[in-house]
Amino acid sequence: MAVAEPGVSTEQHRGPSRDEVVDAVLVLRGAHASYRVYERRPHAVRGRTFRTRVARHIHAIRGIDLTVHAGESVAVIGHNGAGKSTLMRAIAGLQPLDAGTLQVASPPRMLGVQAMLNGAWSGRQTIETGLIALGLQRGEALGRIDDVAGFARLSEVIDLPVATYSSGMRSRLYFAISTEVGSDILLIDEALSAGDGRFRKAAQRRMRERLDESETLLLVSHSMSTVREFCERGVLLDQGRIIDDGPTERVIEHYERLIG
Picture (cartoon, rainbow, N blue to C red):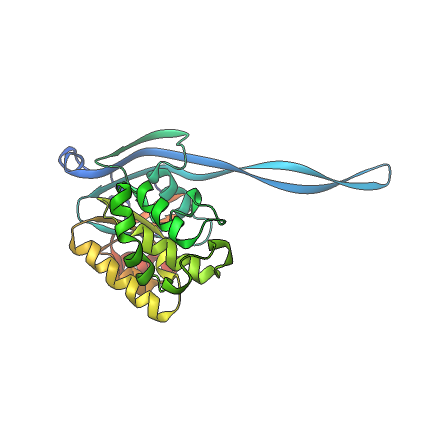
């Protein structure tokens, strides 16, 4: 059960009604997810110091209930470590749930295909493979390579290995691939910060186009200006729990109080 900040009504965190769930494209119920991180901790034996690899269990999201409807644009905000990225990975099917259920009307797509790509490939191979992975037939993928490269401003280096690209160039490439193909449920984790100011404006225009096509968007961002621009609803996480869910401006104000 979500825990509200003192002075904030818990009524806004109630579970949705049956009618609300029927009309939903994404429903999470009682979701828990965790992962392990490994640390090397020193210990002494007979006057000598050794480092042992020790696992630490992180309970990242705790009993989350979330319902999202078609065409909604939802910002997921919170401080570092609040559970935002784990929540997005769970919705995308990349992070197994320890408990709870997830129901989606269609497979969500996490913006960024870098996890399945190889730095030794050229930009051209990366685009082709990425678009096929997103559901295009090979012929259609080949026909879109020049458009994707142009959007990413990488036409002159498209045949060089991706490993030779700067981090900004790779970010532009991955964003261009991921948004080339529409998706009913699109998940974005900080990707709109990719590239320089000129590219960010192009990325924002593309996102507006996707929203105009009535896609459902879940966005993680530390930029409140980006949240205000793209999202009508905010979800605030703290210590793996939803502590506020409602109109964007109200949730931003709650977040700003939370961080001091």
